[in-house]
Image (cartoon, rainbow, N blue to C red; front, side, top):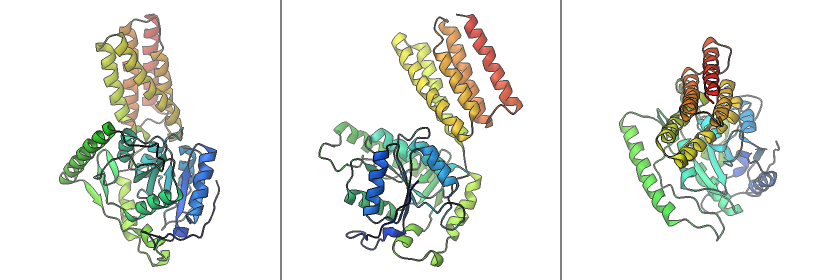
Length: 370
C-alpha cells in the first residue's frame, strides 16, 4: 500500500473543491491499472491515496481504518474506487461488506466502481449492493475528476429495506460513457436501462411507502473538501446512524441466500428440461458453487467453502443416474441453506457436524448408484 499527496485545485463546476483533503482507497488487480489510477488521482489533487490489489486486502485495510470521527490504526477512507474483478472478494461483494458488515468503519462512505466492462447488468448489480456511482475505463484526468466531484456533491439519502441498504437507487441507469470514441451505448441496453430505472423507481417508492428506514446524513465530505475543518463539524447524525446499524448488519451467510434460491431454480430446470437445458443449468450451479468456494473462506465461513467444494464434485459425478445425482445436488443446496439460515461458520458446533454428516451420507448413496 502506498500513500501519495497532491496539491492541485479543481476548476470549473466544482471550483470550490480542494481534493487534497480527500482520502481514497484504490482496489485494482492490475499493477499497471493501479499505478495509472493512483498517478491520475495525484494529478487531480487528491491528498491521500492508498492502493491494494484485491477486495480481501481492501477489507483488511478498512478493518484497521476509522471513520472521520473515530480512531484506529489506519487513517480514514472517504472514497473506495474499486474494479469489479478483484478476486477473491469482487468489487460488488466489497461494496456489500462496506454497507452491511459489522466491521465496516463507515457504512455510509462513498463507493465507486471503475471498470472497462460496464454494462446494464453489472451496473444494476452494483446499485443493488450499494455502489454510489460508476466510472468507465478508459478515463481521462478530467472525467475522473468530474465523476469523483459529482459523487462528493450528490450524496443521496440512504435507504434500508429487508434486502438492501445504500444510496437511494431512484435514478437513471444508463452505463456511463468512457472517454473513447469506440465506446457506445447499445440501443438494446438503452431500452433495458430505461425499463430497469423505471422498475427501480417503482420498487423504491413502494419500499418507502411501506415504511423503509431513510437516513439523511449531512454531506460531511463536501464540507471537508470545501475547507471546513474537521474540528468544526458535528458528526452526531452519522454517529447516531452508525450506532443504529448494529441492529441491521449482515454477513456472508445472509448474502448468499439469493444464490441458493437461484441454484434451486436451476436444478428444477435441469430436472424438467432436455439434455441441453440440463447442461446449461448445471453449469450455472457450478459457477455459483465456485464463487462460494473461493469467497466464503475469506469471509469467515469455511463450512460454506467445504460444502460448495463438495457440491462441485457432485456436479461431476459421471456414471450415476440422474435421480441419484440430482438428489446429491439437492442435498448440498439444502446444506448451504441450513448453514446460511443458522449462520454456521465452521465445524465447531453440533449443527455444523450434522450438516457434514448428512452430506457424507448423501455422497455415499450417490457413489453407490453409479
